[in-house]
Image (cartoon, rainbow, N blue to C red; front, side, top):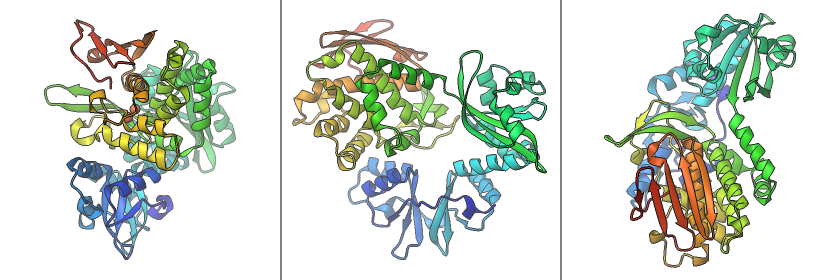
Length: 476
Ligand SMILES: [Fe+2]
Ligand SMILES: [Fe+2]
């Protein structure tokens, strides 16, 4: 297979004189992490990554254009339309890069990224068993996938499973490989259906005896026209399902607003393609080590935020003067829509101050997008614009009627970050305009009780060990 057959032809491209805002907009529009820079003749002269862009914005020099911040063509590795995909995979792995432009006579005609190569290797696995089992590249990719991967042969014996599948099942590969699986043999199992019909089955939900729910993709492994086995990939969606169920259960306006705004929209797509990372922080070096990539973290973050908002609604917080439910829900749904995340891998050690964009910047960008493209009311725009500002850093003309809501959004945002990235458990108590929040999780630094008065902004933080009323802590 050649590059032209799997490349993405929707090109993120800007001209050499494009400024940072235009570059960021192009990235958002195409859900891309890079943009190509072309000259007046349409030829490729460089590539700007999200990282380049963040660095340029952080240095905040005025008048910077794509030419100043791009990696020039001379330093880029490019593919041609007829470059074999295997060759592309080799280069991406060797150079540890995630993107590669495809050019024809130096004019960009497409680009390739790691996920397309991954898709290709998986599709290739459909064709020949041996290629899947023996291709080192496929094995490497499969081992690093967050999704579980299981290969079952025609006797329903498990032949392969990756680390994610081991973790999810609670059994080691050694214990399972070679064993016949009754679950896969069951009459309603998608694996069995694929084995019998030879047709792939995608997005099939499966519930196991322990009450866990998985979303599975099942493809036949063919050899000379006969089904030799089935390759199943799956992800655990138990928590998402539970949350969805809880959201449905509340059956209030929050849930309706969510349902009306998100499905089939560009917002949903954008949020689902913005990853979040779990990490371990090293206080001595200031560095973090990535322990998990949550691919659709942006989406989960919003779902969790709405869930917290629904809980607060139940506690009567939304009937508080100065808190408008519709405005709050809109602000929560869109608050991080302009967020651009770096591409990081599990095990990578990075300096968070360098790789992550300053939060205030995505808040500004989200507000601009919401104002320009979604024409949301000014209250929603202002709440989004300042959701990472502290009270004392707000501009003088910030509307005072929005202050209680802004404080509430910061709290919800922080709690949702805890739910999404730290597996936290949270609880609240409402007493007039005072809100007491408890966060409990595996990370002792975040175990705390915080009491906030939404009207005055007065905040008390109780850590596990002591009550420290002087210390004001940002919640996220
Ligand atoms: Fe944010
Ligand atoms: Fe957020």
